Amino acid sequence: MKKGLLQSALIISLLGAATSASQAEVRIQGAIDFRESIMTTFKWYMGPMGSMVKGRMPFDAELFKSRAEGLVKATRLDLAEGYPKGSVGDSEAKPEIWENWDEFEAKIQSLRDEAAKLQEVAATGDEAAIKAQFGETGKVCGSCHKQFRSKK
Image (cartoon, rainbow, N blue to C red; front, side, top):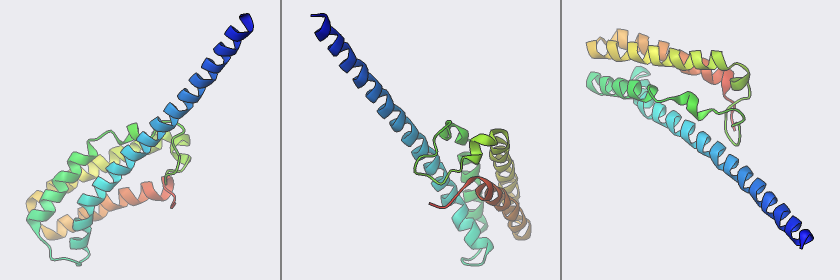
């Protein structure tokens, strides 16, 4: 009787450990999906603005303003929440994110700040100023990608 009870307890504890491991994997994949969806959202807003700045499409002040407003809204999402410790997984995130967490968070805040400036400048309709501020906003994105992102 005791031997059967001990075996049952062992099986239950092993199943519990396996369940905990799979829950952790689901949590990590959820975080990766979350942050990748935010990055896709940033790209949605940045893409047309970049095309206008680079002359790949005609400059449209109203469209630019709309995309800048959308970018500001997207930067209000808590991107850092998508990077729990150990969530490198199958993603482009470098381990340096967690080794330099304060710097990573500062870059997220810098993106928020530059996007807000872009929104302000876009509201003026001044094409030259808009293009200059878009460059500053893009630099923030690029600096974070350079330091904290690897290609899959």
